[in-house]
Image (cartoon, rainbow, N blue to C red; front, side, top):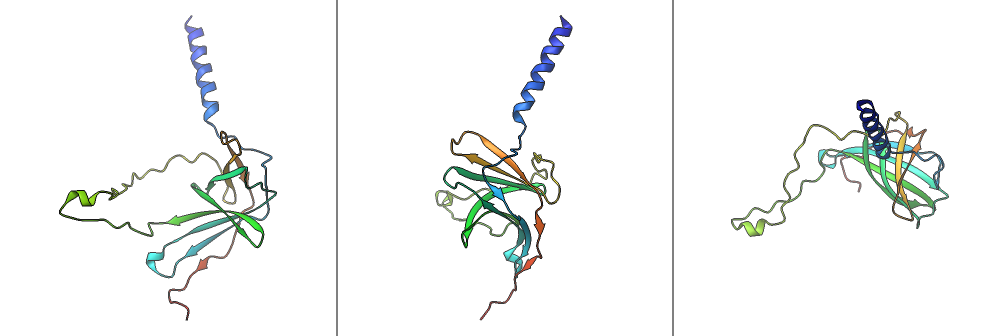
Length: 172
């Protein structure tokens, strides 16, 4: 009886962990050609710095596919899609640091301070990264038309471009 209970608990634990794993799709409904990443630095300290990942997409049905997240080098960000000269891109922008501090309303009447956002405390720990990726690999999460299932696909061969350093003086 004890052995049966042990096997039952082991089977339940084994089956329940399978559903939480993120499964990568081998045949996504789009094609990727020549993805790149480029570090950028603003000309002034307040403008910040970051990394932009550009993924050219072809054969993409824009109405039925919603791009969600980009997982790259131990971090994740939301994906925006842009069209430049007829070419569709999925773009993930990773920013280093807080670029803009929100305005805080200070008033003797506490009712007028309504809407102030409390500061975000740093916990020191990031959430566990769900994928094991090399330095030139990323994962895109997307939802296909039905809107029920999140799918993931791995992209390899992301090339680093020269860093883009903006000048601090304005152009005349």
